[in-house]
Structures are given as C-alpha cells and as structure tokens.
Length: 385
Ligand SMILES: Nc1ncnc2c1ncn2[C@@H]1O[C@H](COP(=O)(O)OP(=O)(O)OP(=O)(O)O)[C@@H](O)[C@H]1O
Image 1: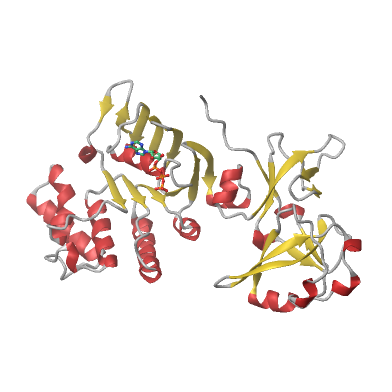
Image 2 (image 1 turned 120 degrees about the vertical axis):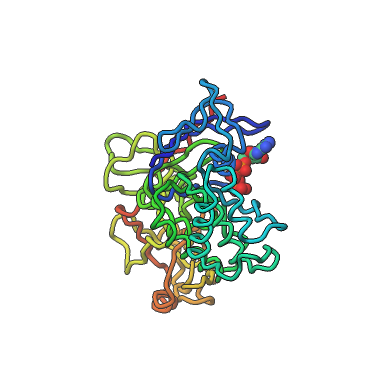
C-alpha cells in the first residue's frame, strides 16, 4: 500500500513543491504555521487541485496533471479527519458514519455491517441516534474517526485531530488512535504541532519549510541527526549555533560562530554544514576542565518544567574571568560574575534529582558538549524563483 505524492501548487505569496512516498506506516508532517501541511492533505483528499504533478495510491492514479486525471474526492478511498472538518450537526452518529458510504457501490447489508463494525470498534454503542451536540469532545472525535475509516480507506489523513481536546482526552484519543493504526493496512499522514505526539504516533517524519521538504526519514534519524536547521528547530533542538568548517588541517573540528568556540566532531562534517547543534538533554556538566569540548559557564535562568528543570548556561570566557568571591553557587553567588552577553546561552535539561545535586555547586560549572552527541545541519533547501 503506497501513497506517492509529487505535486506543485501555487497561491499568491506561497508555493508548494513536494515529492515523497510512504507505505503502511504513520508519517508525521511537521512544519511551521503556513508551511503547507494542510495544502498537501487537501490535495491528496481531492479538495484542492495541484497545478502540476501526480498522486498515486495503492497503484491507482488519483491525480495526474499531464494526463488530465483528477478523481473526485469520494472516489479516492481516502479518509480524512481535519480539525475544522466537523461532524454534520443535523445528522445522528449513525448518519454521520454512513455519510461517506453513500458514494460507494455497497449493498444495504454491507452498509449496515460496516456501521455496526465501526460502532463497536469505537465504543459508540447506545450513541447511534444522538446528534453531535449531545456528545462529549472525545466521543465526537471517535465518531469522526469512525466516519473517516468507514470507507475502508487506502490512506488516512489526520490534520491536528486532537488539538481541540484537553490533555486527558487527548491522551485517551491518542492511545485509541495507536490501537486503530496498529490494525490499519493503509498509509497514514498525521499533522500535529505536538512533538511528543508525533514521536509516539509516527514512524517517519516529513519536515516542511516554506512549501519545500526540509527533511524526510525515520523519526529516530531525524531526531538524532536533523539534516537541516528547520528540522533541528522543529524537532525541539534548543542549542544551535551557526558553524564554519575549518581548514583541511582540522578535518574533525568546526567553528561554532554564535558560541565563540571550536568544537571537536566524531568525523569531518559534510561540506554543506551551516549549523552545529546539541539537544538540551545531551549536554553534560562535568567536574572540571581539560576534556574536549568543555567550557566554563554559570547558571542563568532556571525554568520549571513538569518533569524537571530547563536551565540556561551562560558562557564565561575562561576561569580568570570568574572572581573568586563570586564562585559560590545559588542566587547570591551570581553577583560579580560577567558572562559573555553576546553568546546565546545553552539550554540544559535536568531531572529534579540532577538539579538538586548540582544547584549549590560553585561556579564556574563546566559544560561538556560530547562530540558523539553533536550534530551538524545544513540550511534549508533554496526556494527556486
Ligand atoms: N485556498 C487558498 N488560497 C490562498 N492561499 C491559500 C489557500 N490555502 C492555503 N493557502 C496558503 O498556503 C499556505 C500554506 O497553508 P497551509 O494551511 O497548508 O499551512 P499549514 O502548514 O497547514 O499551517 P498551520 O500549521 O497553521 O495549519 C499559507 O500561506 C496559506 O495562506
């Protein structure tokens, strides 16, 4: 079951040009607001017509500009669940689920069988005759998902399906979706702004930047080593510095321009390298100087998170910049220290217990950027005129 998309679509002030293929797995679409995620889904669903290109699903041509093929939405065997694509308020749960089936050439018995199956699968027994306004948010989403799947779609398109739900319902719906997807044999495209959700639900990620594919691959690869600056930012990397490749005499080193330092890498960076980065949870505080990629710093802002602290580490030039008097930790200990203001601080994630172990340690602290944890990234693909 393969969904293959190779399309272009222009609007005033925006152009989309993407090419990708995905099989039986959930593909997460990540991208800033306005990067083209919804337009892609709408083109696949047949709600929007691309200007150029081709879309095929399971060997069927849904759209081919050159051959003049443009299957109507109802014949595409695509199920979609859009945040703003609400249930029909004047139809009951059963009528909403049956709605998509009216265009398929099915016997009355088959329609009934599918309705029954979806009602059971999504635990909607007893709610068949209710109207959407008489259902909770979670129940409404279950009906919408049942409706999307009732046509037995070859592809399922989910555009921020849970964004209107509270956290509790959201995680309930997410686990229901995961169960549904484990039995689902088609391709799934899943748009979400919630990174953790994308990570839990999807096996692969497509990162979009201004209508272009910025990164495409397995989620593990993209999280470990985001190939572009947008992929790094959108996968939550807080520590990124512009970078410059050093002379061939130092092939395994790179100049981190914003951080004002030279960093050792495990291997020579690709020639397209424009950034170097490291995730907040991969930074380490070590006992002292001497190791590679180890720099003096002091504590800046401390931000509470649900599971620990994110702390900002301010760069210090070197030990002689740190007055002896000011080397005590804690809030009072910050007096008298002069960080290098123009360098953006590093973000370090600490669990509550690591924070408690560290917080009273005298300054300077020594931050270590493990070469194995550093990644290099390129600029985003150039936009053709
Ligand atoms: N029918 C349309 N007419 C004109 N411009 C449009 C139309 N549909 C989308 N656009 C533009 O295309 C661009 C991409 O929109 P799209 O809705 O795909 O973004 P998105 O990545 O889904 O954003 P968000 O995360 O905010 O939902 C935007 O600049 C939008 O204004």
